[in-house]
Length: 446
Image (cartoon, rainbow, N blue to C red; front, side):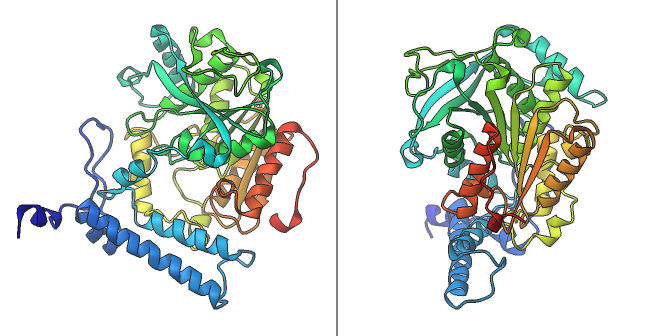
């Protein structure tokens, strides 16, 4: 056998190899499932072949179940819902977070953004530029939000430029900046993956229903930038949007004209009032929204006018009962041992998962925050996370929080705009932002 062919079948450890630069990340456990121990021990191309066959088999089973009228996992699911859930769940099963190829596969899959034409939107790349003297603000933020933690703030490398993008649905005409409804969007991805380009199906629809531009931040991801780096970058970007002096002249620029977004020709920097801004996020981005609001409160910075959390991942201990009871119906079928390891890559080894800013469900005081809408599906593993967050917020912010439970829906269902409940949920976000009467369709609510 030639050297090239023999190398194709070389077997290595199925564990992810932790880079030397990730000093706070421990050696991961083995994948729990024997199939993925074998598959991830093989070279990447063979693993991708095995994964593709596995995913195809699960999709074919779901298709056959629909063709032969087998009982569905949830009664309201149509054939497209069943097949989508089967595809996404199978893909998740092939990617235990602690496995050898998982990080490479996910980063490869998410490296190419969804094309702007596909989501019928204008997209303009932007950047938040920090001054050289930004470290004092970082030190202040760490002191205010991470008191009592073993956090060496001096060891963090702060970026001087934070990538972002403006996105606006083509049905929305360019807006006058002073009158614009601006969405500040924080994407999900378990604090480790994804970027604004992976979420354009959602952000373009948010733009459509809010009738304004979305500013999606490409914040720093763990493990390269663990807690609380993303919170810092979200606060800095928000202060740049509102022109607040706290961050010492952080500003937003663009390499292109913003005439497709704003009605003032070639202006490349915009300043908005806090009451023009609505912050939104999904999954870990939904948790980051809550962390961001709590950080603003701790720093005595102005709140945005409202916030929307879609399936927020606010308890990284993953201890709720619905992690078991909704395991069959959600596509979030990640290896649970791997998930716990991945969260240690986010927090670092000296920060407890239960800390009230790491897991905001444990926070005791939500007073002083802006209006908040929480959307969650009752078929997802994070269902009780959203309910628990809502109940905790009711204790101190009862007038400002609203919970919508969507019948038979799985994690971040709003992304899938071809599903009728997803479109209805996004319309509800528009109604919440503009404080107009709900278009609530009782078919989709619990």
